[in-house]
Image (tube, rainbow, N blue to C red; front, side, top):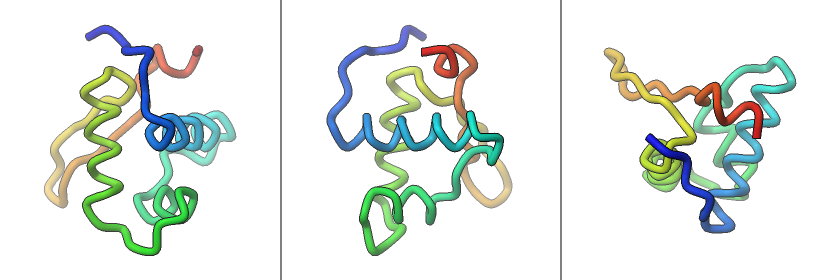
Length: 80
């Protein structure tokens, strides 16, 4: 899948936060951490919508786990 260059400001902000957290060694942020960073009071479908959109555009990998989707930053996205 090719990485798309066009992201909405909201998705770009979330991706920048995810990259910074992964680069710092803290690993992929929780949905709560992403919601807090985005200034959202609730961890509802908004966070999942952003994560799924980043997956569709090639920035994230995802894997189905027993308790739901597990997302991770694609290796190619680390170097951008």
